[in-house]
Figure (cartoon, rainbow, N blue to C red):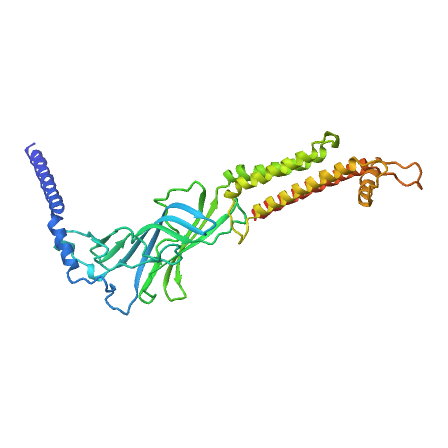
Length: 400
C-alpha cells in the first residue's frame, strides 16, 4: 500500500516538474522577443546598408524575383478609349544576403518589418499603361517583411489604367482579351528576372463586377525585345448581356417584325403610309436613344449597329412600297399600269387564278388594283425574308 502511494507521488512530482519547465520555456520565449531586441535588430540590419546596391554577393549574377499577382476588383472598361481600370496587388519575394541574422541573438525574432525605401526593392512598371509611367505602388507606402533567412516580401499594388485593344463587333455578346505587361524598368534581364509563382492570378480578395465576368487570368513570364524580363497577365472577360438584350435586341426585333405588316392593311383604310412612316420614325428615335449604349468605334465596327442600319433601310423601302402600292391601287381603268407591275401581277396572280383570260389568244387585262396586290405580296415577302436573313446572320456571327 505504502509503495503504491510512493509511486503515485513520484509520478505526480515528475509531471509537476515537466509542467513547470514547459511554462518557463513559454514565458522565456514570449518575453524574449521584446521591443529592445526588435529595435536592435533593425539598427543592425540597416547599419551600412545601401538600398541602391543590388542584393547579390556576386554582382555579375542575376537576382530572381518571384511574383504573385492579385486581382482585387475590376473597375471599368472603356471600349472607345480602349482602356481597362482595375485594382491589383502583387507580392514580390527575393533573397537579400545582407538581411540575414541569427534569431538567438535577438530574442528569437524570426521576422521584422522595414520601410521599403530603406532597403533595395525592385521597381516594377506597367509597360502598357494608359496613365503616367510610374512605379506600381508609388501612390502608397508599403512595408517589407524580412525573415531571418534573408527572404524579403514586398507587397506593392494600387489602381492601374492599362491600354487594352477591344473587339466590339459581337456586342453585346462580346468577349474581351487584355494583357498586362509588367517589367523592372531600368534593370535588364541579366540583372533581374521575374518568375511567376502561380500560373494564374489570385482571386483571394476579388470583388466580382456586375457587367463583366472574368473567364481567364493566366500569368506567364518572358523576355521583351529590349532584353527585359517581363511578367504577363492574360485576362479574358465576357460582358453580361441581359441588360442590352432587353434594351436593344428585343425592341429591334419587334420593330423589324412589325414593319412589313403594313402591307397586310387594306389600301382603302388610308393608314398604310402613315403607319409605315410612324414605325420608321419610331425606330430612328429608338436608335438615337440607345446610341449611347452601343460602343462608338469603327475598328472593328459593332455588327449590331450595321444590322440596325440595314433594318432602317428596309423600313425606308417599306415606306416607298406602301406609296407605290397606293398609287397603282387608285389608277383609273384607262391609265397604263406599266411593264414591271404587269409582269409581277401575272407572276403572282395569274397562276393563282386571280386573273383568268376568256381565250388563250386574248391578252390578260391587268388593272391597277391587280398591280397593287402584286406589289404588296412582293414587298411583304421580300422585306420579311431580308429581315430574317439579317437576324440569322447576326446570331450566327456572334455564336462563333
